[in-house]
Length: 335
Image (cartoon, rainbow, N blue to C red):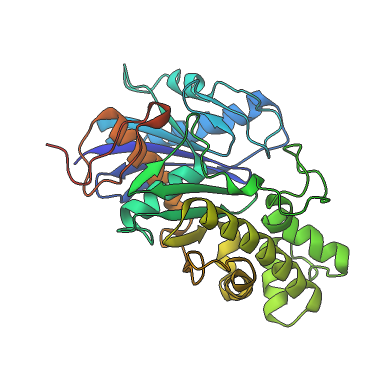
């Protein structure tokens, strides 16, 4: 059995896993992300996850380690500047992880954006498998995306291609933490959905945190403010997806992440709104489907991309572009 390591770092959680060459998680560890704390405290949480994984007997069989991180990232420099983690700006994450004392000698971690990792996973084992041109999105604390074009994972020069969350959909919208006005993320992230519902008049039941999941529960129960918050998110997503489809032509859109767990509360208005924006012949009727790998897609995708760069065997591996220092992945097991 070939064993890959993976980290998935987002605004809500820091997860790690050991993954085999069929994409199965052998062991998983997780910590909350101290997103508003210092850079050192954030790194301590990452180290704690690695420490826990290192206790597993398969750790010593590790052949590579992939890191999926909220972005923007710079895969060539090994640095991250997540919009929703203020203390990390050009933070040398790859070097810090490489310095972990239990990491096998000579093993260099491979950095990838979290949404690109999710895309690699869904193209390998999930909803985008077999599709030549797909947009895969993570809608969670933030909104990210990745592209498969011509059957190959398209990462871009710095590893940020497909970052759909920072497409402007409202020219007069509020400034996003990234600095631009009216970004998709400001309408469709879980944080934005909860904030909009609360501002409109919705409040969470006693003892329930005011999250996007709570808003979804209220929407299903018929609360008009909660339903309007998801309608607003769906409209922003539809506008951005249609623009992307017009630019590169797509066969499929896959949406995962915590907000996607709302199911038809999100997908029904999104598919309806797509008809308003995807009006050109080559964009009309574009399928929009839920991700199949749920919340582990980032881990699986990070492992897949790292395995390709390390040149180790994988079963029915995904396909990546050669941009940003990431070599092409084979479409089958390596010899």
